[in-house]
Length: 130
Image (cartoon, rainbow, N blue to C red; front, side, top):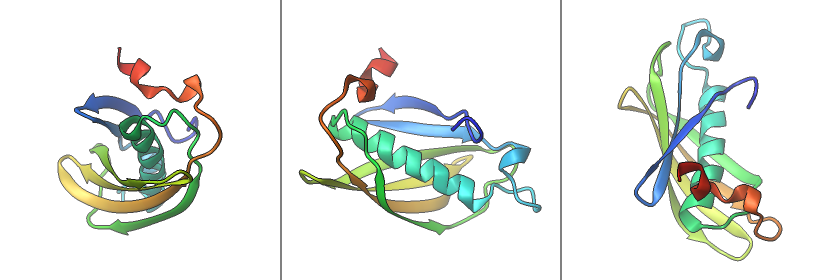
């Protein structure tokens, strides 16, 4: 994330919102956020949001990530992602995230994450908001 961040997160009820401000380095030649950056946000939001919402405290590597692009996210826009956990099994989590730019839906992503290893306090995200 050092080359694409920073990303910001805040709690919103039982989930977290993950966001960033679109800078020139995130943009394609048309001065809108590159789809790859939106997918990076989706990947991070799915992992962080699922961990937080399902209280897993685990590393969640991505198994599958699909994304539909709905509208542009222009230079300077505040982009944020809200994730919903659809199902959690012993080995996998299934989730979806909606991404908006200045309140306008710009992407929708769904993903499958692997539940890896034992609970690890490094992934206890609720401590970030104490």
